[in-house]
Structure formats: structure tokens, C-alpha cells
Length: 278
Image 1 (cartoon, rainbow, N blue to C red):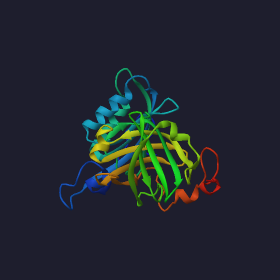
Image 2: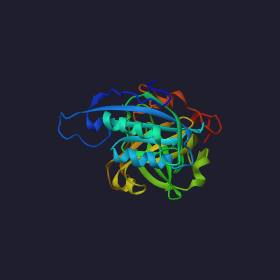
Image 3: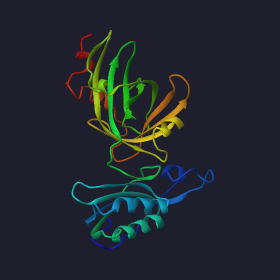
Image 4: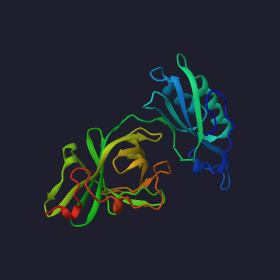
């Protein structure tokens, strides 16, 4: 912990390329910027007084990336990353906050760079998501995200991963109705279980569904098995467009893990796909 109470910390960063910290493409091949990342908990009369929106405006003006959310304990939680002077300036802002907020303490912790693409509010659901394991002609997992009242869907042959180094092929398939989200059992000659479900937040610089139309969409999952930031990157357009599903390097990432093998059971019935009889 770098600081508690109202004293400002001195921040020290690490040297990363601009691409790695998510503040835009590198100016030159070997260009770099000294960056740092902090996690802050702001306490006092700080919820319901416009603190989150004011923090977003200040962070974006400083060209920082990260997020802000209301904590369950009445605090405002902030993750910010970028050049040291800009992070320092945001920390100074957090000690005062907007009117009529009343800050009594700010706790600052240095954390790892996560590589966010913008500064945004977290904790506001964009809808539901579901991952259904499906054995049909081929074994795959269907990722479905609620967008404008329907479930946009991608078939992932090897299933999702919590390892940021793993890039999973995701083939875009037909939209589904939300009524299908809880389906489990025999489906024609195949079998289906609900492998994971929950809510999600849209992220990135471009609003949805335009982000999907452009071919790069960032989101945060709050499931029983899948958590944290993910990105869908389109690699081939056209019918059955191909995408890559990639876990972001955040606090929920699990390098070297295999969440599909480690947690094979349905979140609804507790059954594995092999325990479903066609």
C-alpha cells in the first residue's frame, strides 16, 4: 500500500511500450513511455454525488486508461494507468473529488499494468451472457452476448480461456433468442449444457453494436467461471466470420490455466456433457 489517509504518494513506474499500456499505438518501433498503474479506494461521502462521472472526465482529460466503480462498502474504487505525471494528477484529484463530495481517506496501491483501451465506468451491466457446451457434428462451446435484445453468438471449438497468452478461434454464428439461454439436454443428435452464465459490461472506445460491426469489441464478464476483461477481434469477415477471443491481462487472468478442463460441469444442473443422453 502506497498511502492511506490524505497524503499523496510518490509513484514509480515501469517502462512499457505505448501499445502495451493501451494508450494508443507506438509512435516509433522502439518508442516507450514510463508508465505506472494504481488502484485507489476513496472513502467518505463519495457515492451519489457524481464522483464516478467526474473521475471519468478527469482521467480522460489526462489520457489515462482504466476504470472507476462504486464499491459495495460505500467507497469509490479506481484503477488508473498511464504516464506517471498523469496518474499523479488523477490521485491529487481523488483527494478532493467534485462538489459536493466529501473525501475522508484515499488508499493507494501499486498494481500491474492491465492494458485498458479507455477510461470507463465499471459495474453497469450491458446484459447477460451464456456459454453453452455443445456436442453435435463437432464438440464446441457457444459464447452468447446479449446485444439489442438478441444473443449474438460465436462458436469456440476449444472453449474460452483465462490465459491471456491463449487466443481462441471464435466463429460467428446465427443470433439466438434469450429463451435458449437456459436450455440443457438433447438437441437433435447432439447434447447441450450451460457451462457458464452471468452478466457483462461493454467496454472499448466504440459503442456497441458498432464495435462489433467494426470488428473489435471489448467486454467484462461476471460469470461463475469466467471473470474479467475479454476482447473479440475479427480476423476474417463474410459469412461465418472468424474472430479471436482473447483474455485481457487483468487481475482475473490465470496464465497457464485450462478453465474448460478444470471446471467441466454445468452451472445449472452440475452435469458434464457426457452425462447428457441424446
